[in-house]
Amino acid sequence: MANYDVIIIGGGPGGYVCAIRCAQLGLKTACVEGRGALGGTCLNVGCMPSKALLHASHQLHEAEHNFAKMGLKGKSPSVDWKQMLAYKDEVVETNTKGIEFLFKKNKVDWIQGWATIPEAGKVKVGDDVHEAKNIIIATGSEPASLPGVEVDEKVVVTSTGALTLGKIPKKLVVIGAGVIGLELGSVYSRLGAEVTVIEFLDVITPGMDGEVQKVFQRTLKKQGINFIMGAAVQKTEATKTKAKVTYKLRKDDSEHVIDADTVLVATGRKPYTEGLGLDALGIEMTPRGQVQVGKDWQTNVKGIYAIGDVIEGPMLAHKAEDEGMAVAEQVAGKHGHVNYGVIPGVIYTAPEVANVGETEEALKGQGRNYKVGKFSFMGNGRAKANFAGEGFVKILADKDTDRILGAHIIGPAAGELIHELCVAMEFGASAEDLALTCHAHPTYSEAVREAALACGDGAIHS
Ligand code: FAD
Image (cartoon, rainbow, N blue to C red; front, side, top):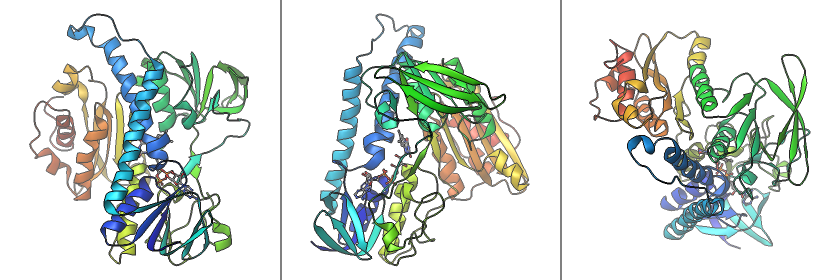
């Protein structure tokens, strides 16, 4: 048992970043994590392993589709699935060990085990009760379930099981056309699986810019991914090696069955608060099961805060990290701030998809006077040279003030390019500010500048 200024429950991107910042601000800090490794969902079974598999499968795709065009001939690589998984595991281990190193460097105590909060100011782990002036709940999220669908993590899997499949399935059915389903669907499609995505809505990646949704779906179709849209999954029936998925088409209520070797249930995630004892503490929750917090991330119980996937907002690692840093400032008596209007979202398929700020649909809904500047990667020399001319940059700016309100990119390195727009928006820049900024040639970034130019007198290369 020990006394701390801050105990953070959960060692994911929200929790570990918060712990490091608290320690840097001079607070005696501990982080409780029940999983055998630090890094949370993101490093262990989320962002990092999925990006490793996306990277490996993308390299295979490049070798199969583009190498010969550049005069790189010879035997194309074959897939050693065990080795690919070993590479993925190594990526995870290097990253999680990195957090352990950072904890030691910053003198953050890692308390290993599952925490409960018996009362404000106390955190219980096993038989030990630790005292803390401030408690920060950063317990993250878990996959949401779907009625009629029983997950066994072997044949019917969540994203967690999909990262450790025994073999590459011949037929993969993905339930849900959100970010996670499409990223992992892309991985297995590139590795040779026949992938079918079943989506309840009529569009993929709900909430994204409509134009991007259309181009993205068309691109994925061209890559060989099948879509069944407007379909409500009724149930799955699995044996040890196969499954059947029954769904109803919403347009005519007709029932259909599709076979699969593996079914990936990717219908979203829900906040995880089990075992914390929040009920007994009287901590207010939202109707969606999130911990309710105020502007300073404090719950209705003084000294208990919450951040990351367990509270409202996009379930993204960087949103959790930003809240982690901000709440650390807050408990250290400083002023923490997160600009929720400038949180980028990225889909790490090829091409990548990235967005920040308002969509055109949202601006229309608000009755806002806006203009659109768009530029196709077909007009970008670097993209064409790299077989990456598909997609575009779209900038939305206020028609009267020219201030950038949102940006949507589908194309090469979209996940990197979006940050130029984030910085611009953070500084309240106009489209003209971007258009007047010299961009190196030849870079993908020139497409961003051209889209900004298109908000004014026009792009040069379109
Ligand atoms: P988590 O990362 O979920 O961490 C919470 C931690 O708390 C867990 O390790 C858990 O074991 C621990 N915990 C829970 N309860 C207790 C307790 N009582 N005691 C002790 N420990 C406890 N986001 C992105 O931004 N980019 C991506 O590319 C991306 N890819 C993803 C891919 C997949 C397949 C998945 C599933 C998610 C992905 N995400 C991505 C989402 C991202 O992983 C989450 O938004 C992020 O991990 C949330 O961070 P967090 O700190 O709130 O919670």
